[in-house]
Length: 49
Image (cartoon, rainbow, N blue to C red):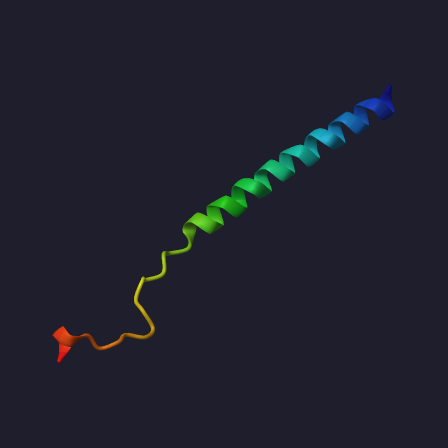
């Protein structure tokens, strides 16, 4: 019975760590600022001349 309890406790702790890691990764991804949408190359149009 002791080994069963230890196994269940280990599984519960592992699941809790996995959930915490998932929330941490999502929080880090949401914390990065959006990159500006500016083109690297711009072509002249007839209105620019």
